[in-house]
Length: 178
Length: 178
Image (tube, rainbow over all chains, first blue to last red; front, side):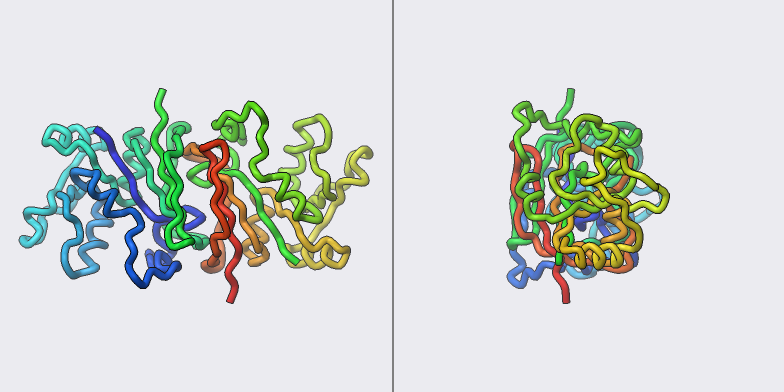
């Protein structure tokens, strides 16, 4: 069982700017909507775990629900899911350990962990096995940082570094344990 | 005239850990002391500008003075330089603009800007033209961050991405202006 992160950050490590904006993700023009490795990545996971903020942001985009895999939303306050999403989105509670164990028991062994706070919680519990970071060539100078405080250093191994659209470097790291 | 940054950071963007430690820079073994592009870089600059902290850290290493180019130390408090370094190290004061202008007038047109606070000051004044970041594959979870608050977004262009020792990715960015 493995947990994966796939996320874009600015050079200075933010996932949203000071106004919660994500326009800067389009700093590098991608007129043909070229895939930056995301669909390959999605094929490797069984389910997606995200925080309420990320879920509500995705809902706010409107249009069709974008995820082809079951989405588990970590929330202690959300009570309901829109009827149209009842077979796609599920509520879940608990620590990173609880969630990983519960989903593993239900057969979801490869999880895509998404959203700043959720990722930070899983990293604090040392429950992230792979980290794929797409570096957008912009300094935001403030906003929502991807990474937070950890109880200690966590070493990783670089698996690959790929450049997309000549500008976005995708760094793929695997947790080096023991 | 151009200002350059060349610095190693953790995956989470720190240049020193919570105890001001830099042992993690050796996370990736380099028994043959292979050059990671630093000497090529040094050849491209005329002088080095660093803050007092960085200067004192380098002094603290003892041994031979490592820089083959004149070093200008930004400090409002330092009054003297050890006699042995009087032809190598010089004190300088003022804003990033002042320092860039002063050194340019003295014929130092390509400057290596070093040290967390100094780099932040130059970035705040939008006086960094090139950013070379060596990403060490470790999360520190706290420490001295390389980047700080900026008045606005700063876009860059990826010039190259190189991998050293199979583990350290060196990202080279040029400021994209106008």
